[in-house]
Length: 432
Image (cartoon, rainbow, N blue to C red; front, side, top):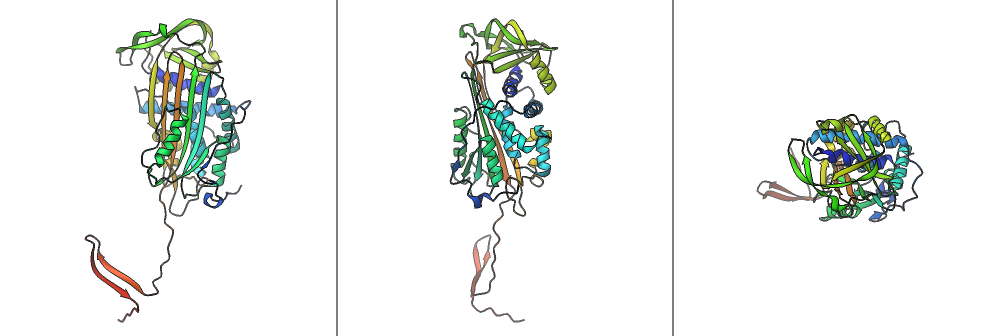
């Protein structure tokens, strides 16, 4: 049977999505309140898993995931694409708490959360986070959030406290001018992803950058029914351009699997651990273009397909694969309606940072990195999303200089540095 080169893409997207489906007045300025309390505030201990999560958020995240994925496969046709929609959505959710006005409306539309009250929105994410991090003993899910603020910059207490309370975010104040500032942030990323992703911030942090909001998601799950390595063998893998290559395919069979035969595809669900988390593999029929298939997926179709899976006896052959992926999400998010958030002149993050006259805060980058490896034992995957917040200018404090006492002055040729004149005036005299 032909297997299309890019079927990994849908397979991995839906794996992450299934994990998701299963499941006052402005405060004082930061500089005044001393919220940082030194260098760091650690995240609170995880509460027990919530009994349920607001279904509106689950559906919104699913819609957002498929919309964003469609944009990325259009930008990168015939290439492997692997994202963590949960990581991206959660990083943007933290940022959303600092947005206001048209920017807040644009982000709500892009994230598909119009009509969800901000308190309900944040509580739903808090519930979702606790549920996802408690799947079963054979599955490990770690979700970590952090806010890295430029030392000396002011941020509103409400914004910081909300992200700490509902998202468990670590709040770090860091001198971005230090030579190893980016290394400190990247070390946090490396730790949270179990060394699978080692860098999300560039070596030199731009002087206009005032904050990074980062989500890291790590997943490791052992198959409920592991593949026997003795059955893994080289088979022909048929590429979308009509060529083929030899590739190791893992095999298992003689069991019942949640399976569905759709109009132009087959789907099978391969469980991890106790079965709460699964990888759902979609294989388009021969002659069906993978890009068109992925672009046709909607929330309604997804729900129909998930409800149509039924226990069926069969055999499965799954490629072993290992992939690293990196993408800048700015253009894709603009296409989803978030353009104003990236506009230095129009963005409104007035609930995040006290804006000085002549300056403005906007998003300059949303960078996403992922790693995945699937073998006979199971799957290990990591995703990191970093939202970079930038200030259009860093205004200097106004000064007041009235020359009303003896003074020294120089007339200088600035190109050569030549001092043409110099003088000391102790008693200025002026006559017409």
